[in-house]
Image (cartoon, rainbow, N blue to C red; front, side):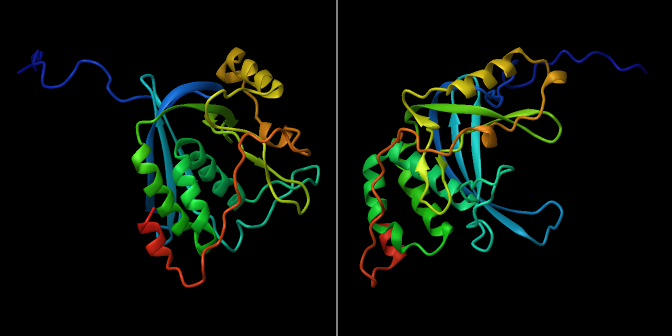
Length: 245
């Protein structure tokens, strides 16, 4: 017996409801959707587990999540060097300051509270927990999000936030870009890369090394004036401090 047509409509809408990832090389009006700590097993070695902090944004057209792996104290505090022998910020410095900028822009009052206790943290996990707590009350805040493009090994240009800090030799990092906030803009170099991406077909997209190519040897105008964290007294319990945020 031949199968007949099924004209049942079923439940739910007749349109796609999931949102795509926002495209690279654009500045979007978005809504902050919160921070989340996740833990998962490795793909190659399932006995290993990894922790990440997700920073989520969304608008009516799409969404973007910046996933930050918890830095490894043994290796992620070391500053790598590019092909020209110039230092780049360590993975810890990039990750830490990415979260700092988010808190500073979207919850300035919370940033001031965090600055007073941050010197007492002994792990990135403690800092991440404090960040999640501080950012939960501001979920839904309208802001802007700057996305650049980074090419993977398969030649696909993926959206990512710009690196927010730069460094030179043994000097402290300085703020070199904003990825969240208002009045975001592309540099002249970034605008050139953006136009190349918009004009290119997938077969013409070449490896994008824009992060290393940027001239970050001298401080740019500081995008934020971030006060240095101050330490509390030695007998303060970190768990108690986070609870009071």
